[in-house]
Image (cartoon, rainbow, N blue to C red; front, side, top):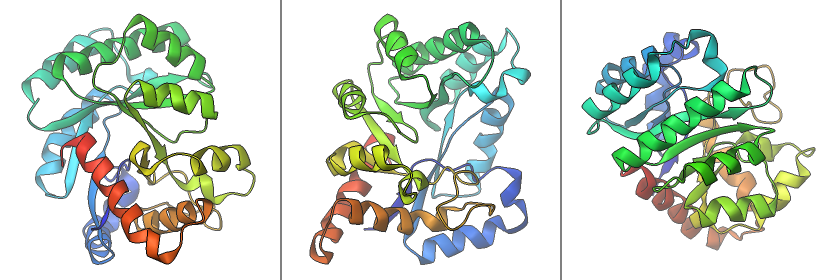
Length: 257
Protein backbone atom coordinates (compact mmCIF):
# COMPACT_ATOMS: atom_id res chain seq x y z
CA UNK A 1 0.00 0.00 0.00
CA UNK A 2 1.51 3.30 -1.09
CA UNK A 3 0.76 6.97 -0.54
CA UNK A 4 -1.67 9.40 -2.15
CA UNK A 5 -0.90 13.11 -2.07
CA UNK A 6 -4.40 14.45 -1.52
CA UNK A 7 -3.48 18.04 -2.43
CA UNK A 8 -0.68 19.07 -4.78
CA UNK A 9 -0.48 21.49 -7.68
CA UNK A 10 1.61 19.38 -10.05
CA UNK A 11 0.45 21.45 -13.01
CA UNK A 12 2.04 24.65 -11.67
CA UNK A 13 4.97 26.14 -13.58
CA UNK A 14 7.46 25.36 -10.79
CA UNK A 15 7.34 21.72 -11.88
CA UNK A 16 7.63 22.32 -15.61
CA UNK A 17 11.39 21.64 -15.91
CA UNK A 18 11.36 18.18 -14.30
CA UNK A 19 7.76 17.04 -13.90
CA UNK A 20 8.20 13.68 -15.68
CA UNK A 21 11.24 12.85 -13.56
CA UNK A 22 9.43 13.91 -10.38
CA UNK A 23 6.41 11.70 -11.07
CA UNK A 24 8.73 8.74 -11.70
CA UNK A 25 10.69 9.44 -8.50
CA UNK A 26 7.40 9.52 -6.61
CA UNK A 27 6.38 6.18 -8.09
CA UNK A 28 9.68 4.65 -6.99
CA UNK A 29 9.03 5.87 -3.43
CA UNK A 30 5.50 4.44 -3.36
CA UNK A 31 3.69 7.73 -3.95
CA UNK A 32 1.31 6.52 -6.62
CA UNK A 33 -1.63 8.91 -6.55
CA UNK A 34 -2.12 12.67 -6.70
CA UNK A 35 -5.14 14.95 -6.35
CA UNK A 36 -4.56 18.14 -8.37
CA UNK A 37 -7.08 20.89 -7.48
CA UNK A 38 -8.61 23.49 -9.74
CA UNK A 39 -8.01 27.12 -8.71
CA UNK A 40 -9.35 29.19 -11.62
CA UNK A 41 -11.77 28.51 -14.45
CA UNK A 42 -9.04 28.51 -17.11
CA UNK A 43 -6.71 26.30 -15.09
CA UNK A 44 -9.53 23.88 -14.20
CA UNK A 45 -10.27 23.49 -17.90
CA UNK A 46 -6.59 22.93 -18.67
CA UNK A 47 -6.46 20.14 -16.06
CA UNK A 48 -8.56 17.91 -18.33
CA UNK A 49 -5.71 17.66 -20.82
CA UNK A 50 -3.08 17.60 -18.06
CA UNK A 51 -4.68 14.55 -16.45
CA UNK A 52 -4.57 12.63 -19.74
CA UNK A 53 -0.78 12.61 -19.46
CA UNK A 54 -0.71 10.89 -16.07
CA UNK A 55 -2.88 7.95 -15.09
CA UNK A 56 -1.93 8.50 -11.44
CA UNK A 57 -3.61 11.94 -11.28
CA UNK A 58 -7.17 12.85 -10.31
CA UNK A 59 -8.35 16.42 -10.78
CA UNK A 60 -10.97 18.80 -9.45
CA UNK A 61 -12.55 22.00 -10.72
CA UNK A 62 -12.84 25.14 -8.65
CA UNK A 63 -12.38 28.83 -8.01
CA UNK A 64 -9.85 29.66 -5.25
CA UNK A 65 -10.16 32.93 -3.29
CA UNK A 66 -6.50 33.78 -4.04
CA UNK A 67 -7.35 34.30 -7.69
CA UNK A 68 -10.25 36.75 -7.43
CA UNK A 69 -8.33 39.16 -9.67
CA UNK A 70 -9.02 36.75 -12.54
CA UNK A 71 -12.68 36.28 -11.64
CA UNK A 72 -15.48 37.47 -13.91
CA UNK A 73 -19.21 37.38 -13.15
CA UNK A 74 -19.83 34.77 -15.82
CA UNK A 75 -17.31 32.33 -14.34
CA UNK A 76 -19.78 30.73 -11.93
CA UNK A 77 -22.12 29.74 -14.72
CA UNK A 78 -19.19 28.62 -16.87
CA UNK A 79 -17.73 26.55 -14.04
CA UNK A 80 -21.09 24.83 -13.61
CA UNK A 81 -21.37 24.12 -17.34
CA UNK A 82 -17.80 22.82 -17.46
CA UNK A 83 -18.19 20.58 -14.39
CA UNK A 84 -21.47 19.13 -15.64
CA UNK A 85 -19.92 18.34 -19.02
CA UNK A 86 -16.84 16.70 -17.47
CA UNK A 87 -18.49 15.02 -14.48
CA UNK A 88 -16.80 11.72 -15.35
CA UNK A 89 -13.34 13.33 -15.31
CA UNK A 90 -13.36 15.33 -12.08
CA UNK A 91 -13.18 13.89 -8.57
CA UNK A 92 -14.13 16.96 -6.52
CA UNK A 93 -15.16 20.60 -6.57
CA UNK A 94 -12.50 23.04 -5.41
CA UNK A 95 -10.13 24.27 -4.28
CA UNK A 96 -12.70 26.69 -2.93
CA UNK A 97 -13.23 28.47 0.36
CA UNK A 98 -12.91 31.70 2.32
CA UNK A 99 -9.72 33.57 3.21
CA UNK A 100 -9.73 36.57 5.54
CA UNK A 101 -6.29 37.64 4.30
CA UNK A 102 -7.89 38.44 0.93
CA UNK A 103 -10.26 41.26 0.00
CA UNK A 104 -13.97 41.13 -0.79
CA UNK A 105 -15.26 38.56 1.69
CA UNK A 106 -18.84 38.93 0.48
CA UNK A 107 -17.83 37.87 -3.04
CA UNK A 108 -15.70 35.04 -1.66
CA UNK A 109 -18.69 33.73 0.28
CA UNK A 110 -20.96 33.96 -2.77
CA UNK A 111 -18.47 32.04 -4.92
CA UNK A 112 -17.87 29.46 -2.19
CA UNK A 113 -21.55 28.75 -1.63
CA UNK A 114 -22.13 28.39 -5.36
CA UNK A 115 -19.45 25.70 -5.40
CA UNK A 116 -21.03 23.90 -2.44
CA UNK A 117 -24.29 23.82 -4.41
CA UNK A 118 -22.45 22.57 -7.48
CA UNK A 119 -20.76 19.78 -5.50
CA UNK A 120 -24.15 18.74 -4.15
CA UNK A 121 -25.62 18.75 -7.64
CA UNK A 122 -22.80 16.55 -8.97
CA UNK A 123 -22.61 14.39 -5.82
CA UNK A 124 -18.94 15.25 -5.39
CA UNK A 125 -16.79 16.11 -2.35
CA UNK A 126 -15.39 19.60 -1.74
CA UNK A 127 -11.77 20.68 -1.35
CA UNK A 128 -12.00 23.58 1.09
CA UNK A 129 -9.42 26.32 1.65
CA UNK A 130 -9.50 28.34 4.86
CA UNK A 131 -7.51 31.07 6.53
CA UNK A 132 -8.82 32.67 9.71
CA UNK A 133 -12.26 31.74 8.42
CA UNK A 134 -13.59 28.63 10.17
CA UNK A 135 -16.47 30.72 11.53
CA UNK A 136 -17.41 32.00 8.08
CA UNK A 137 -17.17 28.52 6.57
CA UNK A 138 -19.44 27.21 9.34
CA UNK A 139 -21.99 29.91 8.48
CA UNK A 140 -21.83 28.99 4.79
CA UNK A 141 -22.31 25.33 5.67
CA UNK A 142 -25.46 26.24 7.61
CA UNK A 143 -26.88 28.22 4.70
CA UNK A 144 -25.77 25.71 2.09
CA UNK A 145 -25.23 22.28 3.64
CA UNK A 146 -22.62 20.15 1.84
CA UNK A 147 -24.07 16.71 1.21
CA UNK A 148 -21.00 14.73 0.12
CA UNK A 149 -18.29 15.86 2.50
CA UNK A 150 -14.80 16.53 1.30
CA UNK A 151 -11.54 17.68 2.82
CA UNK A 152 -10.58 20.73 4.85
CA UNK A 153 -7.24 21.42 3.25
CA UNK A 154 -4.28 22.17 5.57
CA UNK A 155 -6.43 22.00 8.69
CA UNK A 156 -5.21 24.15 11.60
CA UNK A 157 -8.30 24.49 13.79
CA UNK A 158 -9.31 23.35 17.25
CA UNK A 159 -10.51 19.93 18.37
CA UNK A 160 -14.07 21.29 18.43
CA UNK A 161 -13.76 22.59 14.87
CA UNK A 162 -12.25 19.30 13.76
CA UNK A 163 -15.15 17.35 15.24
CA UNK A 164 -17.67 19.70 13.66
CA UNK A 165 -16.18 19.13 10.21
CA UNK A 166 -15.95 15.38 10.78
CA UNK A 167 -19.64 15.24 11.76
CA UNK A 168 -20.45 16.90 8.45
CA UNK A 169 -18.56 14.23 6.52
CA UNK A 170 -15.25 16.01 6.05
CA UNK A 171 -11.72 14.75 6.37
CA UNK A 172 -8.82 16.92 7.49
CA UNK A 173 -5.74 17.52 5.35
CA UNK A 174 -2.41 17.03 7.14
CA UNK A 175 0.72 18.50 5.59
CA UNK A 176 4.03 20.14 6.30
CA UNK A 177 2.74 22.39 9.06
CA UNK A 178 2.94 19.54 11.58
CA UNK A 179 6.71 19.39 11.10
CA UNK A 180 7.12 22.78 12.83
CA UNK A 181 7.53 22.90 16.60
CA UNK A 182 5.67 26.23 16.70
CA UNK A 183 2.51 24.50 15.40
CA UNK A 184 1.82 22.96 18.80
CA UNK A 185 -1.95 23.49 18.70
CA UNK A 186 -2.33 21.83 15.31
CA UNK A 187 0.01 18.99 16.26
CA UNK A 188 -1.96 18.37 19.45
CA UNK A 189 -5.30 18.29 17.62
CA UNK A 190 -4.12 16.06 14.77
CA UNK A 191 -2.56 13.59 17.22
CA UNK A 192 -6.00 12.94 18.73
CA UNK A 193 -7.82 12.12 15.49
CA UNK A 194 -8.39 8.71 13.98
CA UNK A 195 -6.71 7.91 10.65
CA UNK A 196 -10.09 7.54 8.94
CA UNK A 197 -10.59 11.29 9.38
CA UNK A 198 -7.20 12.33 7.98
CA UNK A 199 -5.61 12.75 4.57
CA UNK A 200 -1.92 13.26 3.79
CA UNK A 201 -1.01 16.22 1.58
CA UNK A 202 1.91 18.44 0.59
CA UNK A 203 0.26 21.44 -1.13
CA UNK A 204 3.26 21.37 -3.47
CA UNK A 205 4.92 23.62 -4.52
CA UNK A 206 3.89 25.57 -1.38
CA UNK A 207 4.05 24.69 2.35
CA UNK A 208 7.67 23.47 2.62
CA UNK A 209 8.45 21.24 5.58
CA UNK A 210 10.59 22.39 8.49
CA UNK A 211 14.21 22.33 7.38
CA UNK A 212 13.27 22.93 3.75
CA UNK A 213 12.17 26.56 3.96
CA UNK A 214 12.83 28.53 0.80
CA UNK A 215 12.79 25.39 -1.37
CA UNK A 216 10.10 24.25 -3.79
CA UNK A 217 7.98 21.68 -1.99
CA UNK A 218 7.24 18.43 -3.85
CA UNK A 219 5.15 15.28 -3.26
CA UNK A 220 8.42 13.48 -2.48
CA UNK A 221 8.05 14.96 1.00
CA UNK A 222 4.88 12.99 1.68
CA UNK A 223 6.70 10.13 3.51
CA UNK A 224 8.24 12.73 5.84
CA UNK A 225 4.77 14.09 6.64
CA UNK A 226 3.67 10.52 7.32
CA UNK A 227 6.62 9.85 9.64
CA UNK A 228 5.95 13.05 11.56
CA UNK A 229 2.29 12.09 11.91
CA UNK A 230 3.31 8.67 13.19
CA UNK A 231 5.62 10.34 15.72
CA UNK A 232 2.82 12.61 16.94
CA UNK A 233 0.62 9.58 17.43
CA UNK A 234 3.49 7.67 19.07
CA UNK A 235 3.01 4.69 16.79
CA UNK A 236 5.31 1.70 16.89
CA UNK A 237 6.90 0.37 13.72
CA UNK A 238 4.45 -2.52 13.90
CA UNK A 239 1.50 -0.11 13.83
CA UNK A 240 2.74 2.04 10.94
CA UNK A 241 1.77 -0.31 8.11
CA UNK A 242 -1.85 -0.48 9.22
CA UNK A 243 -1.94 3.28 9.77
CA UNK A 244 -0.55 3.88 6.28
CA UNK A 245 -3.18 1.54 4.84
CA UNK A 246 -5.96 3.43 6.65
CA UNK A 247 -4.74 6.78 5.32
CA UNK A 248 -4.55 5.42 1.77
CA UNK A 249 -8.01 3.91 1.92
CA UNK A 250 -9.47 7.09 3.43
CA UNK A 251 -8.20 9.14 0.51
CA UNK A 252 -9.06 6.63 -2.21
CA UNK A 253 -12.61 6.29 -0.90
CA UNK A 254 -13.20 10.04 -0.84
CA UNK A 255 -11.91 10.68 -4.35
CA UNK A 256 -12.98 7.32 -5.86
CA UNK A 257 -9.47 6.34 -6.88
